[in-house]
Image (cartoon, rainbow, N blue to C red; front, side, top):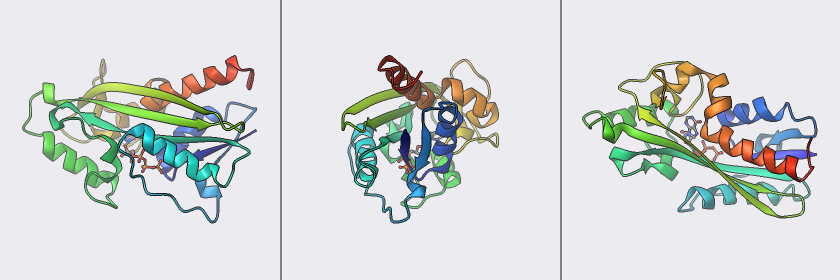
Length: 201
Ligand code: ITT
């Protein structure tokens, strides 16, 4: 079976592949494997809307296969749950990860510990070859660190300390995220559903 991941984010794709490459029934592709693919604007109001937009954009070209679209982001208590769906573009339309994290640190710097509480959210829309839609959600709670540390991962990993930990995700590394991240939680539900439907062993 082919599973197409509707993302242009290499960090996300690497994390999916770490788990999915161990599922022998699936061969994993992404939109980077589609030569004429143009992403649609992510103009939904919610993670679910945007995950659906992404999944459908690949479905239009690969309708007979499994498609997974994901929208994710960081919600910070002291910023009224921003950047949320705007996480990828928090510092501007083509912002780099370093610019987004720098802006976020600046915004929360003078705020209280309570305001530094945050959560990563991940909503995944899977479109099956039979054109069913399956939705999964994952969350990881923690807090924004005082400065960026660590070299692993992507996005806001260098400024996010999960609850119960003293290090950032960028210090904890891929093995930690594989077990505990918002993405890992949503993906585990997808794999459970595939097993319960006997799509995979
Ligand atoms: P696609 O839409 O092509 O999947 P994207 O990077 O634009 O790529 P999103 O719209 O879902 O993806 O934006 C999510 C942003 O939230 C992402 O760019 C990161 O900045 C951040 N983010 C999501 N998951 C993260 C994680 O596991 N670690 C760090 N930052 C994350």
